[in-house]
Image (spheres, rainbow, N blue to C red):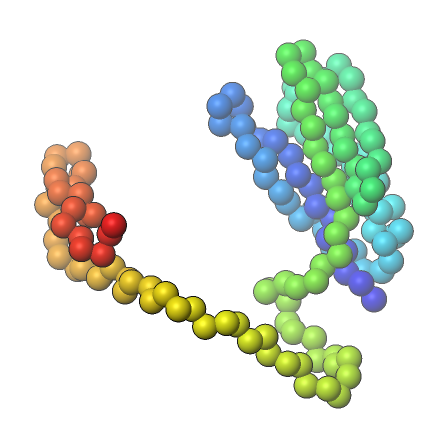
Length: 147
């Protein structure tokens, strides 16, 4: 049985600080149609923070998801809802189910010919700082491992 993530992507912030953030609203066990039905229910009930004075609300179906466009007094705000099958989750215990008795072959990566430089030394020396707490000498000044 598949596990589906119900994902919300929305624009947060104002002005120059606007950016998109994604949230997993819920997980649904079952088929794709069941996940899409739950996603539609949540998309219809969703009320975003912006715009504060909505003038028009439109909900579109798009493939495995929905797009909510709300026109405000000054600009439009969009929120995308999508259903995606969960393939891996680091917080979920590994499944003990095996598909076959064949061992899984490890992927062989080609050896690199270029040697990487050593990581910068971690120095635990007290750094001289001015009254604002800014270092007087930049940490990169004098390093020999930089181009």
